[in-house]
Length: 151
Image 1 (tube, one colour):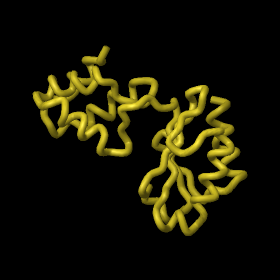
Image 2 (cartoon, helix red, strand yellow):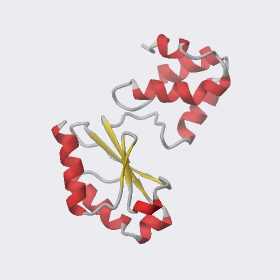
Image 3 (cartoon, helix red, strand yellow):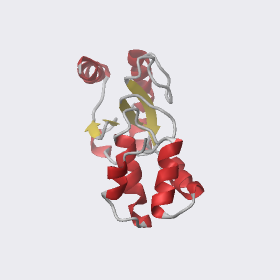
């Protein structure tokens, strides 16, 4: 069931589409938009479901597939790449037991790549649930992931 209070918080204007989609996704528990969400937003904003789907699949921060409770986005910009992003990716894959694009079997983490997080001053950087982490190395990654695992 689509939370109608999320829709009604915003006037039914097309410029509210991204805001509504983000709020629905963040409240879903699995960090994704359901088919029901897409249809409800289309009806509320009086636009086609295809238009809503196009937006939901265009932006990397949105997803139409279930993800983990915590979404980890690793920066793959040229700067982060030069500063060691491939090694950080391997460490994260080992710590989590999944490859980029996958969700841990317990549904806690999804590991994704992002074109750029805009944190070049602290490369290599990643974002978990909107919080940025930078200057990553193996000990830092183990601490960060450990904190999220402990809750």
